[in-house]
Length: 357
Image (cartoon, rainbow, N blue to C red; front, side, top):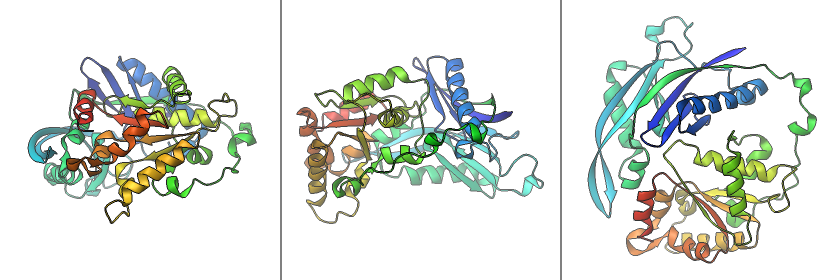
C-alpha cells in the first residue's frame, strides 16, 4: 500500500534542511542534506501507517491543487519595553477542503496552512487571503517579544514536495498484548507539580506521545547528562521545527522502557511553560511561591522539568524589575539541585536574554 503526503521543506542556509509532513507536523526530521531528512520522515511515517497509529492515513494528506505563496508584512515586537517594527515573511499553503474526488470544488472552503506558526484554518472567500493571513498572524504575534518573532522568522528557502510512503499493514493478531496495555500503578503527580505542569510519562502509557526516530545518539547524550549524579540541566538550541521537543518526547519513551538501565528507569519528566505557572495566580507572590514549591518537589524526586520556550519563560512575571520566573529557577540550576530541559530557537538571542537574568 502507498500513502501520499505533502512535505514542507525548509532550507536553513549553512545549517541543513527541515522536512515535516504538512498534515502531521510531528513527523519532522532535520539533516544537513535533504535526502536524509526525507528518508527519516518516510521511515517514521511507514511505521505509523503500518500500525494505523492515530489513523494517520484516514484523512486526506495530499491534494493535487495545493498552492504556495508568500505574504510579506510588518509586525510590532517588544524589546526592553519599546516597540520595534519587524519585517516578516510567511509561507502560506492553500487547497480546497476535502479530497480531490469531492464534487463542487469551487464551492468548497479554502484550507489555509501557515506551517511556521502551526496555523490551519478555513477561508470562504479566497480573494481575501492576503488580508486574512495578515490579521491571523498579527493576532497570534500581537505585542510579542522580539525573541518570539526571531523563532518564527523566515531564514531560508521554503518549498512543498510530495512524499510517497510504501507500507505493509500489521495484522492485529500479530501485535503482542503486552504492547497494548501497560501498568497504570503509578501514583498521580503531587499537587505542586500537577497544578502547573503535566507529566509526559503518562502520555507514553496512553500512547499519545510522539516519538523521534533515528536520533539514538542525541537521546543517549541527553540521558547521560540528565541522569548523572550532578543533576545537570540542558539547553536545546536549534531553528524552529528541527525536532527539539521530539527529542524530549523520545527520551521520555526511553525512561518508560522495560529494559531501561536502573539510572534511567522511572525518571519522570514534567513539562511546563511560563503561562501555565502564572495561570490562576491573582496576587503578587502567589506564582513565586508556586515556583518554589515546584523546585522543592523536584529536589526529592527522580524528575526533570521541561520548559518549552525560554523567551516566553523569561517574560513571565515582571522582568523589568527582576521578578521573572527565571530568577527563581536560576539558583537551583547553578547548585544542581534539580535537572531542567530548556528549549531555545537561536543561541545569540539566548545570550542576550541570559544577560537579563
